[in-house]
Length: 242
Image (cartoon, rainbow, N blue to C red; front, side):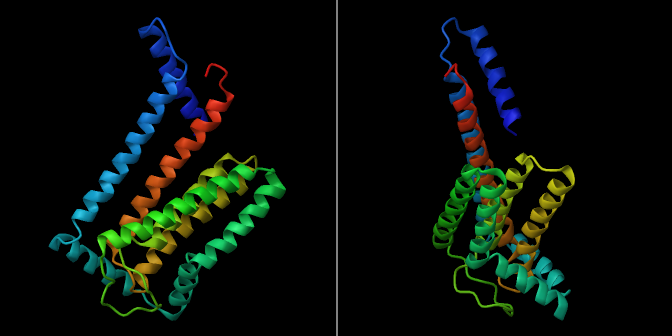
């Protein structure tokens, strides 16, 4: 990702040098940052459009059909699995996983930067989710709940945090100097956790599918934006021209 961003900045610099006689080295970064912001705004627009569809009969029918299909697979074994997964997506679960990641990042890579980046995305996702829930104020499904819930429904905090936390972790892992087999294994595990946590909320009857979709979109928006910012900061530090 960093190579892609660096290549794009280099291309912008070359273009600006051809167009303008006097060139400020910061322009390329300003333009690239503006594009990152545009992607962020585009993601927000997609989230808003989905939110506006919440009260339509088409979305309500889709929510009902998908929920009925997923809950139709309920078995004692699957219920235990999804309860475990949904607990992993709670605050305590993230604290445990974050503590493990902190230890691994420090011992194996000596990089506190990874810890700070992961914590930053978590705080953004959690705080924005609480605000969005209060603004949108959507009630939980009336179906049977297999776990207790207290907050509002949209967007799903579990789905949003899963995408933000494990999505960022997935990106960080892709940068680690480890063997290809280990890297693919960890990335696959992160992807499975993201999907499982989202599905668990529908399976357990505490969220509509559209809640999960909204949570995934919102979480992904934060991942893309933060990854772009993290990479721009690192490239900016290394570039003597700025």
